[in-house]
Each structure stands twice: as C-alpha cells, then as structure tokens.
Length: 181
Image 1: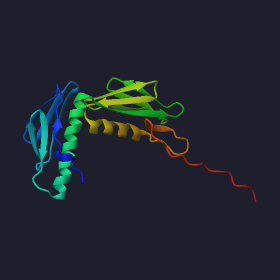
Image 2: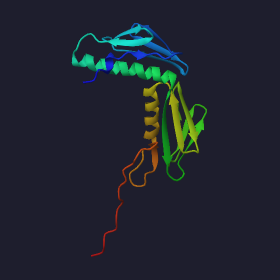
Image 3: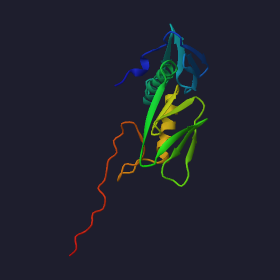
C-alpha cells in the first residue's frame, strides 16, 4: 500500500508557497500556480515544506491524501522546471503554423484549423511538423496536447494525423482484392 501522502513536499530555493484556507499558491522562477484542495485535506507549511494531513484512515481519505500530495509536488515541479509535451504531425501536406496566440493546423480538411492557446501555455513549432507545448501546469499542458491531437488523431491505415512524440500507432492491413472464382 502506498504511503505517498505522508511525504512532505520540499520547496527548493527560489520557490515560495502561500496557504490561504484550502487554496495553495506556489511561486517560482517559471511562474505562479494556484489550486484549491478538497476540504477534508489539511495543508500546512513546515520547515520549508508543504505537509498534507488527512482526517481519518478511510479509503477515500487515503486516496485524497495521495492525490493531493502529488498535485502539490506537480505544482512545485512546474514552477521550477516546467512541463512539456511534444506532438508530431504526419501526412502529405499536413503541417502546423505558429500564430500570434496559438497554432494553426493544416491536416487534410478543406480549411485550416486554428487553435488558441490558453493563458500560461507556450506553443512552438519546429519544421512545420513538430509541435512543442510548454507550461507550469501539468494538467493544462496535457489537456492542450490532447485537444491538438484530437483535431486529427492518427488513422490506422496510413498513420496520418497528429500523434504524441514517440507514440506507436497500430497499423491495420487494408483491403485485398479477392481472387476471381
């Protein structure tokens, strides 16, 4: 059984945390992130670390304890290192073009598909086919990557579409001509 919730989340140098009721705000060199936690979880600052406490040993409190601790650890990692996701675009004529406030995808539709990046997310494009999404919020970075991939998911016959970097797409065999009888 995991005891991840009991570990305190250390705050590295240059990172500060402020607890205001159920809301935790973490500031660091890459930015600031804030999140409201479940009312059953108690957040405490102790010796330059954030400690979470649960009210009982019920299964749901144990689950919330581990989840909350991981969310705090992701917040601290986000403001120190940041998070990135990479996407690849495959297909003849498929490409991504950076715009002022996001990216525009040309992926085989009759029109280009514009995508506006949410606040706190930076999208860069290399060689028109490699899209890199960066930000301090792990959840938001993953959500933006999923939304961009969902514009044209990779299809199983030719593999065309938008995929995560390194994603393996299971290919299917196409139709074969039946021999004449």
